[in-house]
Each structure stands twice: as structure tokens, then as C-alpha cells.
Length: 126
Image 1: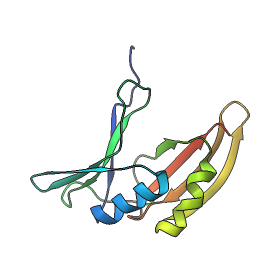
Image 2 (image 1 turned 180 degrees about the vertical axis):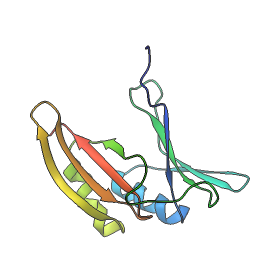
Image 3 (image 1 turned 60 degrees about the vertical axis):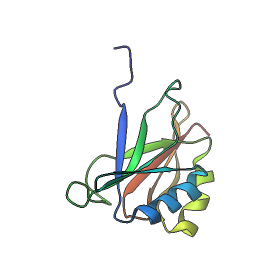
């Protein structure tokens, strides 16, 4: 296979502005909003020449529902998961699992609930 298995992801949201504000503050990025006839998307910054998948926040009440326990768990890469963890709760999220050492070879992880109630994870080498 000449490519990574994951090419795109979508995180369900109930309130696009609230979710956009949360993710911009936690990850210190700008999210671009698009409206496709009732389906709202908030695109995360992406450089398609770099490894990793691109993705977006998505709001469509008929097709997407935020969840704290069901569905796929997305891991965002980080230099140090503690950086993002320090911004989670003051921006409306909740830390579910603090920074946890996995192994010397794999690094660290953490899990949080975003402003919409989605379970999201972080991963870093340090």
C-alpha cells in the first residue's frame, strides 16, 4: 500500500461555533467554516504533503451525533499531550484520562471530552 489507511475524519458537533472556538483554543489553530446546503463543516488546517489524515468538525443533525462512548476514537498527534490537556477544561472540555505513559517506544496518550461531548484522544512521544 502506497498510502496511510486513514485519509479523512469527521468529528460530529451540535454547535459549530462552540466546537470551533474549543478546538481553535485547545490546538491553537484556525478552523475554516464551510456550509454545504445545511451540512456545516469546520476544516482543520492541513498540509497534504505531510503525513497524517486531514479532517473536520461536522454538523448535520440527521447524520451525525456527538458521543462520549460510541464509535471510533480519533487520536490527535502532539509534541507533548500535556500542552493540549492544559487548555481542555478552561475551554469547556473535560479530561477523562490524564497523560499516561504507554511505553518507551510508543510514548504517551490522554483522552478528553470536547465541548460537544465527543471522546477524543491525544498522542505524543514525550
